[in-house]
Amino acid sequence: MTPEVSHVQSDALVIGGGLAGIVAALECLRAGNRVALVDRDTRERFGGLALWAFGGMTLVGTPLQERAGIPDSAERALRDWVRFGELDPNDTWPYLWAQHYVERSRNDVHDWLEAHGIGFLPAVNWVERGRFGEGNSLPRYHVIWGTAQRMVRTLADALRTAGAGGKLTLLHRHSVIGLEYGLGRMAGATARNDDTGAEVRLDAPVVVIATGGINGSHAQARRNWPIQQPLPTQMLNGASPLSDGKLHQIATGFGAQITHAGEMWNYAAGIPHPKPHFPGHGLSLIPCKSALWLDHRGRRIGPEPLVTGFDTNWLCRRVAEQDAHWTWHLLNRRIALKEFAISGAEHNPRIRDRQFLHFLRETLLGNARLVDQMQREVPQFLVDDSLAGLAARMNALTGHEHIDPDILQATVDAFDANFIDGKTLENDAQIRAILHARQWRPDRLRTCKPAPLQQLGAGPYIAIQTQLITRKSLGGLRTDLDSRVLDGNDQPIDGLYCVGEAAGFGGGGSCGKRSLEGTFLPGCILTARAAARSIKAG
Image 1 (cartoon, helix red, strand yellow):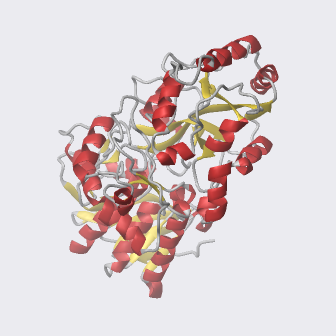
Image 2 (image 1 turned 90 degrees about the horizontal axis):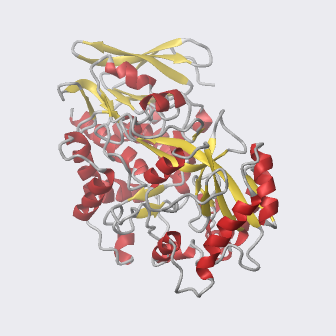
Image 3 (image 1 turned 135 degrees about the vertical axis):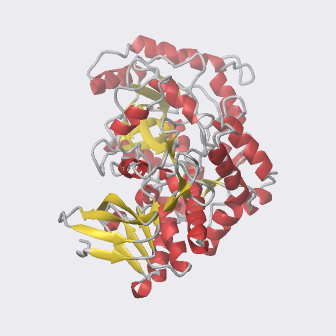
């Protein structure tokens, strides 16, 4: 339990103990400031969502890219970013933050992390290519060796070291219930101990909001859902209930502006967490490219098939358009062993714990450990030796007779017919997408060579019931390139900063409508370091 305190004075108050808050506090301490950091979560969960994240980062112009012969540049990355995100160049601060990201991600994120002993896997992955090539025009996705969990714990240790001798006051299980303003600038905040109910006064001339987004609250997500997009009747929560936007609303009382609140980065294939951390907690699958994505009646969704790795935003819209709130992934064990994965540190222990030989073995021979674990622990992960038996299991799970085994068989037969006349005569958009993905070696290692689903010896069959899962807010409080919160006249509110997801990862919406994926963890670091530089100069 956090020790009881009633009054804290500091040079900078950081609200939120996720990655952005940790980095902002760390850099402020290193600049000689006394820092108070207030976090709503427990000591064990210090680090927020990043503590559980996989650790993928979109980075530009890195040594890994150079060694792989990837000719990246800030100019090329910005073109991809603006095109894919449909970013409006007249939307000044989001555009400038996008430019800042592609220009500074190498030095301010990659090199900064390496200086803290954080390295990356040697392969650079190619994600969010766009359905028509309008996304990442080349590979940029770097994976932290040790996942984001190792990064967060390393930086948290550095934070405690920098804050030794009373320079850091760290309060867990405290919620900020009001901001204080006086003499023309921010003056601190009032927080409440969530265990005892006691209030604490937090005096500081500088306040940094690092409370995450709004998508942990389904009420907020639904309230801000884009009018032109269908809203599912049910969704899982892949964020945290603590990311509820309450401090966003408090900040508007001082003139802050919430922008692009309807832009979100959700995922199309979630399953309920078998050991949930909170009600409605979901896991985000990395859908198998070779699986057939079916509607609730077992028919292949089309006419353009759903394939992951090209446009996540489009996948979410297509799933939300379906008649039921769930869809099915139909595959076999051959596909699952090579392609099945779950986003996050929790279900990637070989990377998280830096077990290189085990990781290499599972990459080359198949991840039977994870597949078998899902079969044991997750009711939505169904396995059967026949398609008819699988259909019966699917209907038993939902309590409806939606799946006609004859229709399911016909769906599979229609796909498998692509291979009857030889491997060069198939004519299917999903197969073409798979063949394109396999041209890049890291993707070839994790993507099956196209083959019939009913291929002899590839079974048993697997059906996974999935649904849309909320994740990130792409909008937030409008900020300038110093992470200062701006009022309705685009003027800084003296002493008020906002970083990370709370700032829409910079400017109130730097990604636009779509992310190039892997832009969130670096966005937390970039915005937090910008705030700390400004506070130091200030």
